[in-house]
Structure formats: structure tokens, C-alpha cells
Length: 374
Image (tube, rainbow, N blue to C red; front, side):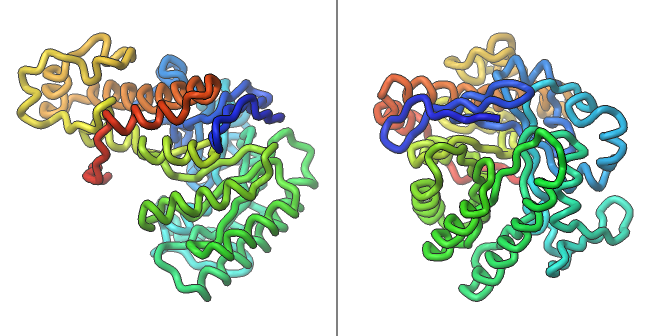
């Protein structure tokens, strides 16, 4: 794997990540395929939407169908029919999202399985071994994603544990002769001093790239932006920077402005399944009665299959009739919208016009906090 910064405009970076399974132009958005599939979409849909890399979830694939089965069947690329790059997370987000059914110890995270109710221990060593079995291009060490808010004592304890797990993960990875590249995860809660310490100690270990974790977990938006800017500013310039889990369109634009290269989020497909579409003017909820006779596309500026072919009226009809097709059509549009947004940002950075692009984006895009829950 190699990464090169091709152009900059302020802190915004235009880069290129080269992996064994293909090239990723950055800044890039990764559609989330938690269980080896981006919900409602096939690999051909993802390619048509402009995807170059997808994310899969270590913990859920460990649970079902199991990493050994996937290894036996040729690895995750072959298993899910996706020949492009794959990034896997560490399982650390499940430490946050499944807090009611897990216990954290020095050894690792012990989960009560949502599949069969059995207890399973995910250690830093096993998390890396699972990702090696999957054959992902970019992998991550097990970490603790701390909930917000957290006390200073809890944040310091959590960071120390994440750093110890990082060392164990790195040792396991270096012993294996695999092409996967391991990104370190920078934690530290919302304390600026801990974030700086996290960067210093994580970078000193010598990872192939760096992820920023523990943000977009309920903290105020200004806090997330300030910590993103602080962390990105002190990370190595020559290595990729990945902001984990942040994915509202406005967050993508603001985080690219602060030097982030890679993103993932479930919003495009999760909100599509709940009837929400992202457009150049903001998000709309397709079930609303005002769309019943609307012959226009979801977004007149979008060139995706959904917008080229179907009206808002038809999509509303599908949604209120509980027709499964609507999940695919709205998901395809939303993923296309996110990927097109990234492409426009790459062009703006390359031409030295990112500031103007950012101004135009917020002049038309109506930011809404009323995103539909899963």
C-alpha cells in the first residue's frame, strides 16, 4: 500500500491510496457493508455509484458466518463478490454500541452474542487475526470507543487501555506475513491534552495510517470539528487520516476542510430504508403527501439511475406501499449522492477552489438535525 498527497488547498488534501485491490482517490467515502453487504445494494450498484472502497465489520463477521469460513471460501473479497479495496473496523465500535452486553477487561472485550446468547471474548490479538482471515486491505487494532460524556478519569483510563491493546495488535500483525495494512486508532475522548498524547503515542508505534475514533458519538458538533482539526493537524502529513463513523454531508465537507482523507457512515443506506433521501438542497422524507403528484426526480442535479429513471411520486408510492424496490432505489441514490459529493471536493481541492466550493455547498444545502433513526 502507498499513499501520496497530490494537492492541498488550505488544510484540505487531495490524495491517492494505492492498495493490492485498486486505487482509492481521497478524500473518499466508504459505504458500510457491516455483514459483507451494503444493505440493498450489490457490487455492480456500488461501482455504478462510484464506490472505490467499502467497509466491513470485524465483530459481526466474526459472529456470523465466522472468519474461518470466510477464509476457507477464499476471503471476504471473493465471498461478497467485491474486487475493490476493503477496510475493516476493529470491533471497537461494538464496544460502544453493544455496551449492555459486553464487559471490558485487560484481556479484551467479552460479549454476550446477539446470535446465540453465548459469551465470546474478542482480544486485540484475535481481532487482528479475524481481519487477516477476512483478507481486508486496511485493518485496525481493537480499541475502546468511549461514550460521551465521560469523566477525565474514564477518558485517561480508556486511552491507556487502547494504547496497550494497540501494542498487542501491532505485535500480532507484524508476526503475520499478510499484505493487509494496519491503521492505528487515536482515541482520547474530548480532552485536547489526551488527544495530543494519543497522537504522540500512537504515531510512535509506527502504523501504516491513522484513524480518529471516539467522535460522532453524541458530542456537540463544534467539539467534534475542533477535535478533528486538532488531531489532523498533528498527525503525519504523509499518511492517510480516517475519521471513523462521521458521515452527515455537512460533516464530510467540514472535516475535509480540516484535513481528513477517509470517511464511513451508515447514514446513506440506513436513512434510505426509512424513506429519507439526501439532495443538493438537503434531506427530504419521501412519504410526505406533498410528493404524491411530484413528477420531478429526487435531485435534478444527480445523475444516478434512480434520478434518471423515477419520479418522487413513484418513489413515494413504493415506500407507502411497502415495496422492497424502494430500499434499493433510495439507497442507490443516497450512496451516489455521497460519492458525488466527495468527487466534487476532490476536484475543488485540485483546482484550488475548495473554499468557494464550501461556501456554495452551505448556501444551498439545508442542514437538518431531524435525521430518521434506525
